[in-house]
Each structure stands twice: as structure tokens, then as C-alpha cells.
Length: 149
Image (cartoon, rainbow, N blue to C red; front, side, top):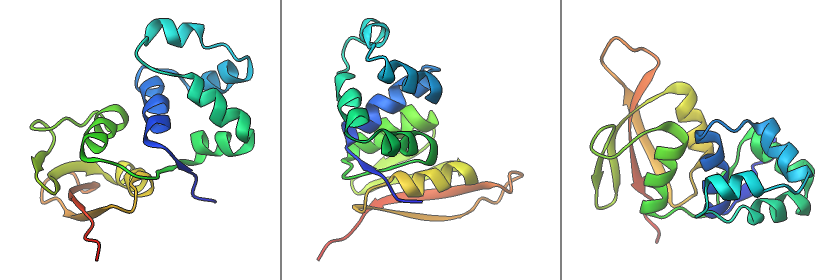
């Protein structure tokens, strides 16, 4: 499977829809019909026309983005916080701790960790270890800014 790279804004748009219960099939149907009215009315602060552009550039790639996953080209700290909230319902100070170079103590299951590893841009590194609790499939991870030389 090819690693599909998309912009942070495209990821936000997709995850905004998903976090509000919109299925991949519905996303594809609306884009095929070029019908964004419902989304524009429900989420007026978003520019869903960017998804139509991405969809029209390569429909096969767009379907792969939805079904197989994607990585974001570059993620800022605020982008990371927003994607964690939208995609995994993880919120700072409730589910993890912020620090100047990333986040600490994010409790995440193995499936989420796999998708997070794929999603993160190269400017972030995940460090993790198994949790010592009754959830053997959970990991406690830190996400830190990658050091560039």
C-alpha cells in the first residue's frame, strides 16, 4: 500500500466529517455528486471544496486515503492536538500532558497507535512502552518533535 500524503487541512476536513458520524461511503457519494451543501450548512467554518479538489485530482488515491489511511505532510503542535481530538477523541490535560516539545502520557490502544504512526509527519516521533495496568492492548506513548540537524 502506498503511503498517501495529504495536507493538514485536508486531514482536518476528513476527520471533522468522520468525528461527526459521516461514513467513508457518504463522503465519497457527496464528492461524486459534487454536493457539499449539507456539510457547508452543518460546519460553516470549513472549506470542503478542498476535498472536491483532492477527489477530482485522483479518485483512486482519494478512496485509498479514506480506506487505507494517510500521513500528513507536516503537522504543527496545534495541528497535532486538533488531530488527536478529532480522530481519537483525545484531549490535553484529560488524556495526555502537553510540554514544549510534544506530548506525554497519551494512553492509546494498539489499533490507534498503528494509525497514529501512519498519520504523523516526519517531524514527530512516537516513543512508547506497554502500560502496566489491566489493559494489555494499551500503550502509554510520548510524541516528541523530531530533532533535525
